[in-house]
Image 1 (cartoon, rainbow, N blue to C red):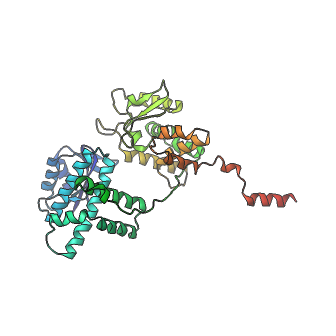
Image 2 (image 1 turned 60 degrees about the horizontal axis):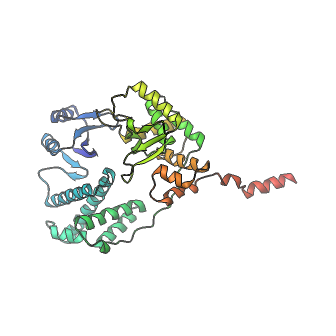
Image 3 (image 1 turned 180 degrees about the horizontal axis):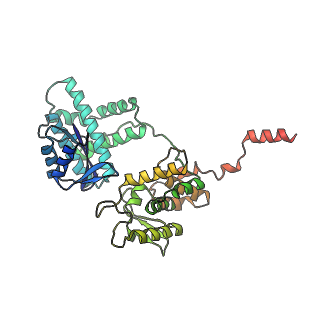
Length: 380
């Protein structure tokens, strides 16, 4: 039996059992402090060492893994070493102020690399893995390069491999204090993909699809203000400034505050929603099921997918397409790229310039040679 535990917020974890039998659910309830999350299909518990220890005691025969690492009093020496390095990495990421998402991604890459490395070293010299041998291999840039090549050969995208290299470089430089100039790697060339965009009419069909007022309000805001899904669910009632027509985004990507547009239509929708939900005492504009928490990002993503299906649009897109469409539609209606960059919170202008490649404003004025030839032929 397997039990998977993942950090989902700064102070909470999700707990998923392989099979939810009545006996196992009873054990989870005996641990105490847990609540069932119907949206995510998992149990929520406070993220404490005491709770993790209780899981191990209540399920002695189960294989428990927390964010990919084994949780047991009977860990092998290799697993103990990897777990100790993971803890050092986590501490360093926190001290450096990295976001929860980036920390989770980096730790995942490092764990997979360390396990791969442990298997490789074990094949070369069977026996207990020594700290010195592992450390020597970690700071060996040629070994990291081989691992990156292996990932590419397995079919992983250049973006995935680049993130893995960044995580391993962070481990070498920030945790093992290696000179940064020595930790240089050959990186795969980034793929240049254009963002998917919906037409203005398609956007309307999607955001008007939900009958639930809360769901519709969230989708209206995502498009009308060009917000990321993480920014929508973390909006506070105090972030709305209707008099100035602004919405304050606190600590967005890159831990940056910014202001973006608050459309009159979205504000009207918010007022109806706040009145209907009686949110006068709530800190969050879109509170979650648990007291004091905001809505989970996954819940909003599911809302969008349901709206997309209801609208009848067959494009394979995620909720981020609303942000892409916001930027493209502003550009097509004459808004300067510099203003769009500020509204989206892009640090690099080249990120915003992508939308010039998907804008159809000027393309519509160009006639295909096939249409011209056929028209001329019919005119004879």
